Length: 408
Image 1 (cartoon, helix red, strand yellow):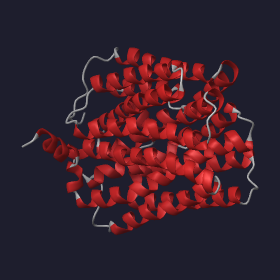
Image 2: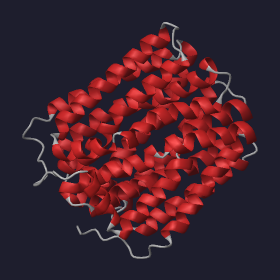
Image 3: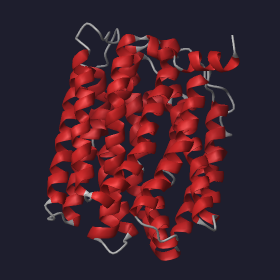
């Protein structure tokens, strides 16, 4: 069997599960719409609602990510306690409605900065409940052996949206205005809702035992396992100071390279190319370990450093490709390792903690990074992201034992 064919078969093995294939097909279009909205939101705040204020972009991100921490006592418990398919139908429908509302407000020309903060918080609140349910829902659609592959294929879909969405957003902004990017995103949620409707109640097998303990038990569960605790600390560092790409890309595009909406969208697409490459490699990877995680963190630091010192637009775009590959490797590995290490009744809370640390750290880090970018320049903000990657590597060196793929 040719090597390329064997790799392709291994990389797509989760699609043998019919119900996962249905879910994945609906997610692709929605992911494109989501990245259209993210790109348009940052562009709107930076160029229309403020005079290139990076702190305002950071504050918008903070309002959107803060619910990951604020609602942490309930998000993971909801994913463990309730029917995940029904929960996802509710959250996806609400996010689509919010996107349409923001689009109408922007198209009418009445949008204000404080209203963007409100919509960002509402969207983030719904997403806080959606994330743990969506990530653990995959474990119900595929077996344990195919879970790392399914996580990686989800990343392929997500990053296909990251690659196409910003380009589509740039074209949409240039052609008809920023608000229509929000409207199109709202419409895209129909695809996910249709795929969820196609999964009848018997299609999904719930875990044998759903959790009834609270969030405190989830923290105790993570605290007792050194490997999980190490992953959480690495996520805290990179999530707080490194995963601020909308801020990095928008400020570098506007303040340093002084490009328009089309070239701004292209920068996000260049980063998405790297993440897509990382996702394909992750899908073909049969095993995950702490070494994989450490490599992702190291490459993240190197990529951010290269982006910070890039002398021109082209080299900056190339560095973003490396950052995207490293980010995907790092985040996908944390997802797989933490799900594989958690028992079914605790999986929702463990994943909620993961999301809260990775995304919830942004409300603390994004305003700090925005302040650094405003006062010292966008390149110094990227330098702070590079430092977070190198610090995560140092943390991982304290945990030398590989994570086992067997349940504790």
